[in-house]
Image (tube, rainbow, N blue to C red; front, side, top):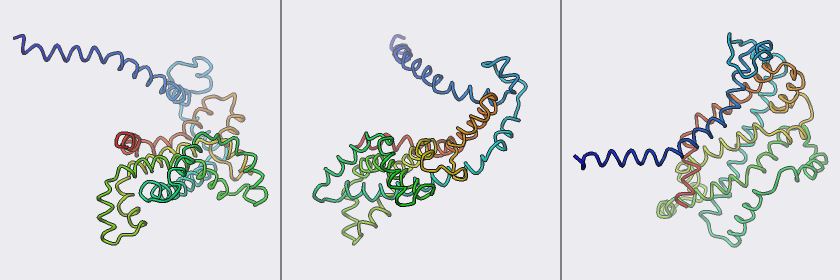
Length: 285
């Protein structure tokens, strides 16, 4: 009898011991989800409902704020510009980082460790200190108010983290696998694109998600280097939107909610690979 009850007692003690951890995680989740819930509830209220009960649930639901947000500004132009910047920067950064990380992780050359150390050091450089020299250079080269100019900046700013993550992941690939392919005559480019890259899919998905989130939400560089109205990104446009609808908070919340939908979809699609990409290099490396 006592033998049969012992596993149940251990299980109960284990659940009680883990209870504080679960409580902390639940509280942290609620704190993180709170602003999103407030944004969603406010977007579904009329302006009168919001003024009468700011924190209360929306009823009846009002979807007119989303229609007004879509047509109250150049929302689709801003969306197109953000998509171009994000897609271009992520592609350029990922390709360049893959080439650099492969050389550091799998090739042997003088200054290899120094190059990786310099790359890690760039992670702590705040983008704002580069703003003035970049602006002066871009004025001289005519890259102000161009897609390619801002894409180059975004790709450069996201490259250090990309190189660091891919280097850590590439080093977890067994040497025997690459040596076998090289014995069959495979070049370094073939090793990267046909063997290393497919095995590193979680790391690449992680980079796409993290870098896309950063570029999509970035404001300062887009504001400085894209001064023309036709080139405004979604985040810059939302600041204009906020000034226009500062007294109509539900419409403003609807616009912000619409702006966050593309990145939410991207994260949900790549979530499984995203978690693996963040943890695999740390565990195996």
